[in-house]
Length: 285
Ligand code: SF4
Ligand code: MG
Image 1 (tube, rainbow, N blue to C red):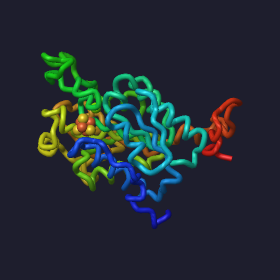
Image 2: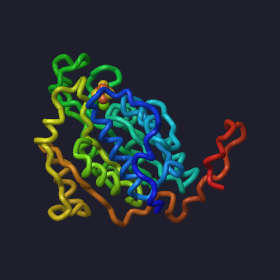
Image 3: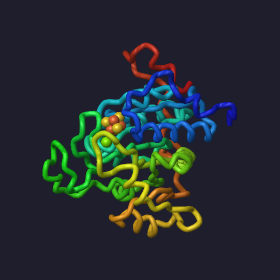
């Protein structure tokens, strides 16, 4: 572990344009802390971002980064990890990016279980496009695209991950900075696909799922009272419906990352003819 790396070393010199008070500030700080605490440095970290307010994170963090197209950050992240398994790969996006257009990729990234981290900044709204209902918006949430509410139940992303064979499922709250960083750290340390859904309030367009709401509603799954290795306990929490939980909800401690499984070919160590100049720079020799 390179102990001299501090979390501020992961901050770029770009000034975030997120609205003052946006939950994404706290989400990003926790990700940077988790990376520093797990001994990573900007030059061994690759952040892949989706599209949306959350997608700007690749610019605000100091690391290798790539801004994927809408909903496609996960397959890009998997490609990066397969090309160079020594990189710490962190994919970040929002609830719209990850659970709507990217929902198919989410399911298959979960089941492939490549050793990487996926952080979803879940504010239950489309923020960048100015406040439309997202997959995790409440059924009665009135927005410009749902003036009478969505009349659909919100996607339960934790259930989607669980049903797809996830080996690590967690949830955190961007404002509970210490606990959020600890939960993301556990996802980074997990051997496999570490998935964290982060409640990251949009202070501009969501006046329902606010900081106050989450502060009051959150139930913390503390290690002393909860066993995340139990599928039965995880199922109960994930399907409870009326509560908001934070903590590691499920972890399969026997998880073996896809790329380390027997029968999987050696990671790609060449790039195809015609690839852009410099495309080989990050590929493992
Ligand atoms: Fe954050 Fe919402 Fe502003 Fe986007 S619109 S930066 S999600 S507060
Ligand atoms: Mg959103």
